[in-house]
Amino acid sequence: VDNGPLAGRRVVITAGPTREPIDPVRYISNHSSGKMGYAIAEAARAAGATVTLVSGPVSLAAPSGVEVVPVQTAEDMLRASSAEVDKGADIFIATAAVADYRPSATADQKMKKSSETLSLELVRNPDTLATIAARSDAPFTVGFAAETNDVAAYATDKMKRKKLAMIVANDVSAPGIGFNSDQNAVTVFWSGGQRAIGPAPKSEVARELVALIAERMPAQP
Ligand code: PMT
Image (spheres, rainbow, N blue to C red):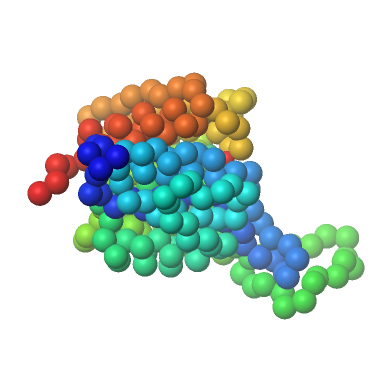
């Protein structure tokens, strides 16, 4: 891998869900398994890169040769990702399914049931991908877009709004792909082009995506 297309490059990847605590025993989260992000980490390592995974709670083993920084919440993910990019990164890939909102307060003790209804106040979480892409020293930044409808339009809008080099649109309404499955099918968009990858195992989608990133990113100075 020393002469792979990403040899000498450092890649930081977010993966998995985040968990936003309600009280000591409950949280808000989603169905992300981390499989897509871990597959990309493995493919980037095989392409010769030095790879760090900033990972929410998942039940996957660290791919061999990949450093894993475990996080729980969206705020942890932003802090850990920023610290990793501070060390210098050529590529940042955000596959994590980050909770957009968190409870405005976390109870210190387990909440008891009493009333028939319960309202939770939620507040917006920071956006790791947008924050990294807005840095003056931003790496080649690749976002994902999980959409259930108007996939291409929402994805390209997200790419422009968050100032990304590339966005990977994932139709998460289609059965058998996306969250928690072993297969995926995506369409990658960049300024002036697009490519469909899959349906295929996430390992294959990851390999093709890493090859496309290596092809599209600026040459090493
Ligand atoms: O983990 P798996 O089970 O393998 O499933 C893979 C996947 C479906 C989770 C993955 O392929 C995927 O689509 N990931 C993006 C999920 C998502 O939350 O998309 P979004 O459209 O809400 O977010 C857009 C982008 O901003 C994503 O790159 C996301 O990581 C990033 N983001 C979003 C919110 C936030 N607060 N911080 C972020 O960094």
